[in-house]
Image (cartoon, rainbow, N blue to C red):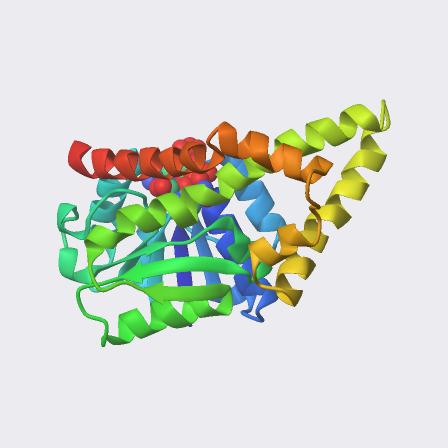
Length: 261
Ligand SMILES: NC(=O)c1ccc[n+]([C@@H]2O[C@H](COP(=O)([O-])OP(=O)(O)OC[C@H]3O[C@@H](n4cnc5c(N)ncnc54)[C@H](OP(=O)(O)O)[C@@H]3O)[C@@H](O)[C@H]2O)c1
């Protein structure tokens, strides 16, 4: 499969990292990027750097559109000017298929940066789930993690919040933990970070062993104990609502972006 990324920032780089890890050859990945620093880094990974104008002369299975929402519609028009028949796989948040100039050739995807480790979760939507292009998109994201094919585009807002943004909310929570850990390991931040790395990985190990958070929590807490006291404080301060509000805010913003364009 020959793929071109237009916009090679954070999410494109995560997908590219995963694809390379999954065995795709760097010669099958072309990149169009305007940021010079990023271009240097792509070159260092032996990826092919091309110009938008080159699209006219390259045979591609998919173009992954991975630019910020404000740049997406103009970039799509420029792609189709160069290569009218290609399918665009848009990872752009909030912009619905009908907003693009050639809606029938757009597939939407909402991946997360865990694709870099082939542990991503990607929601995928197109009007036609049986097309070769949709199958290609499905195989691309299956290489870098799990794929959820959506039946309606409307669902994409919720997935954008939970898959795209949700990871950052958990990072934010873990960062608070790391800051506390750094306080008790005094000035030795390197040690704290190393310990933290193992600690986070052990959370995944624990979940693999027992996929039930209630039971995992029960193994730590005892009646009237310290964990119980902390958990009661979290409940009193409405942790559930705080996180649910964050998911809702991200979903609302996704809807807002879709109405802006
Ligand atoms: N980051 C995530 O975790 C994530 C997850 C899911 C979906 N998304 C979606 O993915 C899209 C990209 O996000 P990102 O975080 O990867 O953004 P980003 O890091 O800013 O990457 C976008 C890159 O595309 C370049 N670019 C923009 N227009 C271009 C053009 N016409 N030709 C060549 N290069 C162009 C930008 O250059 P400049 O810097 O010069 O503008 C930038 O380097 C967004 O729409 C976002 O909603 C992101």
